[in-house]
Amino acid sequence: MPPEQLTKIFTQVYLGIMGGGFVLLLLLETLFPLDPRVTESERTRRVLRNFGLWTVGLVVADAIVGDWLLDIPARLFTPTRGLLHAIALPLPILIVVGVLVVDFGEYVFHRLSHSVRWLWLIHAVHHADDRLDVATALRFHPGETTINVVWKAVFLWLLGLPLWLIAARGPLMVSASFLQHANLRVPEWLDRRLRWVLITPLLHRMHHSPLAAENNTSFGEIFSFWDRLFGTLHAPPQPSVGYGLPNLHGDRWHSFVGMMLTPLRARHLRTL
Ligand SMILES: [Zn+2]
Image (cartoon, rainbow, N blue to C red; front, side, top):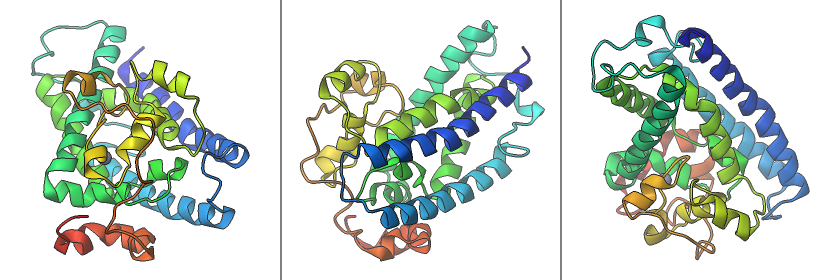
């Protein structure tokens, strides 16, 4: 099957999970909430604000690499140089290698987002959320989404891998992100087993702790290999003190405009 056609399928699955998976998790969160304090009106507000933020990010990223809704242009399909270009990998192996390579790229980007001040100011929009639910998975500043897409495109280009591999990883990435943030109780025995391979909900909840010692851990997006390899995995029981960032409380940081302006408004704060 040609990569163009594969990309269309991956993108459709991605958008299907974005819609159907999101609604299913909203329903499960209503029936089996881990934290029952989130009211319906608060949840509706969170979904609308975060969905707005995600949509702006998608449109900007799409303007950079996509023709329309990440329908990646043909010129970006076939790299002509780079480390892995010379090895003509069979398609299934190329997809597996590509998913792993992009996941490693995400791990590096996420670590930089916590250690480079200006990237942290942008990534803080995601971490400022003081509740965790499936809507948190949409809470990324459009600036972060855009820089992240460019980062992945350069990463793949340097390695001589086609850009459509980002789309190939999309369905896995969005499923992992929704499950990691969902306000659902996950049995600890199951989480313990899954974390050998995956970044699980309990690992990711620790990453949303307000304490720097706890949120500077478990940077992986889908797989936990990279955190194991570089010694950044922190196996929890639970974060010590909830979620969010100590100096970014209140509607000023959580409204749509507040989230858009967070990198500017927070730049004067010594710590977030
Ligand atoms: Zn983070």
